[in-house]
Length: 111
Image 1 (cartoon, rainbow, N blue to C red):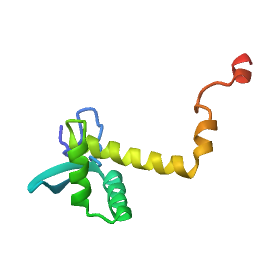
Image 2 (image 1 turned 45 degrees about the horizontal axis):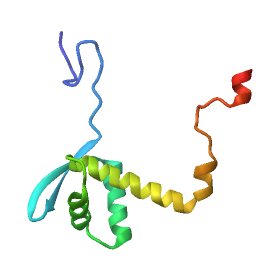
Image 3 (image 1 turned 180 degrees about the horizontal axis):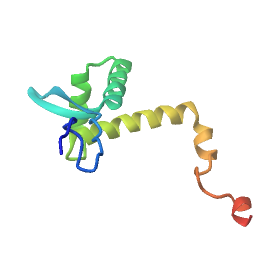
């Protein structure tokens, strides 16, 4: 069998290109790499800009306070927590009134 696409498997399936990108950062004077999806990296940059601090400072702060072994996961959780907090401040009443999406209502369940 001749493969024209090196990412193509035996069953004709094409592997998806990874959306995760490695970024080099310096933490406490040591160069390390962090693998993050572009959306998380962009959001992290927005948070740093909003706070008026450098990405290096923000990543170092996250690293110093993380409770997880993986820095990439800690950054994702930091970004998620940031935007959850922003959303809660912007729309505090909406978060408590919305039903769980996909949960049947009593009326629908009785039908």
